[in-house]
Amino acid sequence: MGQPNRLIDDSFQTDTIGNMKRNTLLMIILAGLASLLIYAGPSKSSVAKPNPLMPKAEVQLHTGDWKGAKLSRDVNVLWLFGPEDHRGGEHDYIRIKELFVPLLKEIPRVSVDEAFQFPSQKQFDQADLLIQYLHLPDLTPEQFTMYQAFVDGGGAVVSLHESCIVRPLDQAKKLAGCIGCSWKGNKDSKWSKFGHEHKIFLDTSHPAFEGLPSTLKLNDESYWDLLSRDNVQVIGAIAPATAREHKSFKEALVGDGVRSQAFWTYTSGKGRVFGTTTGHFTYTFHDPMYRLLLMRGVAWALNEKPAPFMPIVFAGITDEKDMVGTTDTMFDYQNRKR
Image 1 (tube, rainbow, N blue to C red):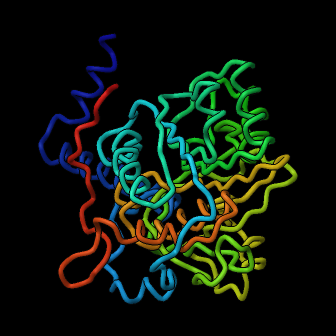
Image 2: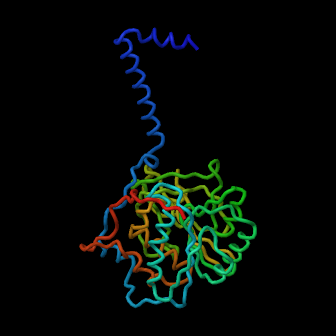
Image 3: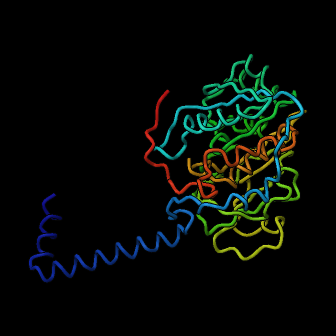
């Protein structure tokens, strides 16, 4: 134990030599860190930042005129949430539930119930649409049977971000049977933040995204290389920051380094599922274009026209100058445990 200490003392016996060695060591460390950042790329080093505000009129080009639009039937929505597991501004499961439940209740013919971690059979029986935003708990075989029966019997599902993850991982196949895609584990599936330098390509030939822009930008997080069932159709993919211009969604989907499964649809039995691996940051849910994608997904899953849900795109995020969105990163939120 004494020998290493004596060698260190000898090597720094003068200030001049000591400073030279310290500076050399510092340069090596800094060079290593720079290499690490270059390797990680913009997706891992991007600073979390919302999109700039947008003119309301620009968003309305994609929502159309919804005045007087009505649903064809009564719709019972069940919002599934769980305990928050990150710092404020990320995975705010309770906060997002408390944001959207009142907005959904404002839509004529829509009623909303809530479930913590997993619904009861009675709640499944009464629901037309399940919206899930949580990290799912360890589900029992009986609960998976209930979930699969809900979807196959005609239930609609909208799955947000980490809702595609369940542990232990040997349950991934069962979850994929219910929602189409699921996390396979750190060895097989991938995750990363992505910034405004990445383009999200949308399949605008799909009814859920028909008429929308072919690309948009967010600063959020996604998962990819998920376990995927046969009836899954990927309708949104994130291109690398260095990607060249793609002429079509199909070309983007097979491009090098693409993060697939940013958005997908899935059918099982009579049911429809709209899923996305985005939605990590709370500010993303205050972005009008992101809300537009979600509401289009809700309408598709319910096999309804999207117009009745379009007021949610603007609710609470439109200022006095008719600019829409937020500039707040929302990291000051104090997470609450149930």
